[in-house]
Image (cartoon, rainbow, N blue to C red):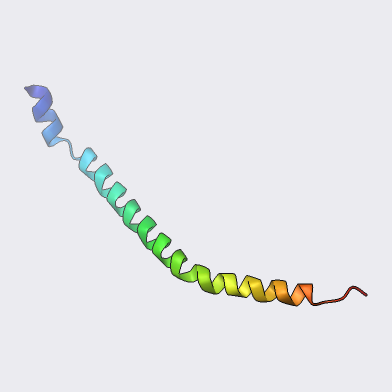
Length: 58
């Protein structure tokens, strides 16, 4: 019974859960942002590739 009471009073587990939730929200935001950004980034790299392939060696 004393172990249960000690666990209920312990606040460090709640803090760890909060940090875990915060990290997961940040990860989801990054994934969504990078997903939206990937199309424009791919277009930039494609234009660079097209420019490099079109150059003749001297």
